[in-house]
Image: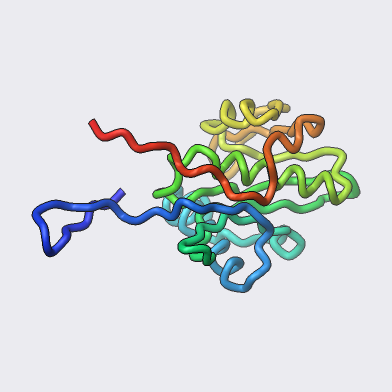
Length: 186
């Protein structure tokens, strides 16, 4: 997190992070724009996995976003994931990402995965799959996912994983997320 100088006192302060967060399907045009911008920032610029983040699955995908609110007003997309159906009953999730400043919140990724799988179940999902970067495999295990096989994707180790649908939803949906974890200063 960046430190900013404050003109009236000797010292610094951290960037402001909104405390009120809500995970929901993106419906407003600004939410969709921020959704694609966040994906591009994470997968194309930060991780350099993709030259072009958008693909053919985006035409049918349902974008799901974590929106930060300030003073009760939606302000910024801080997390994103997409879901899409590949054949009747078979759904995929992908492009899960969280704004770097919000990654230590502790609930955003969980809430995005919970909403993605739960929404697909409502739409007739019988199997929910994702290709997950190998570094995130244990995280998905903690969210009730099983590893089906190790694969190479974009020259990087990934895992094909499947959600245990009987475990979803595992948390409340479309309600404000609890405040971020307390920051410890040492």
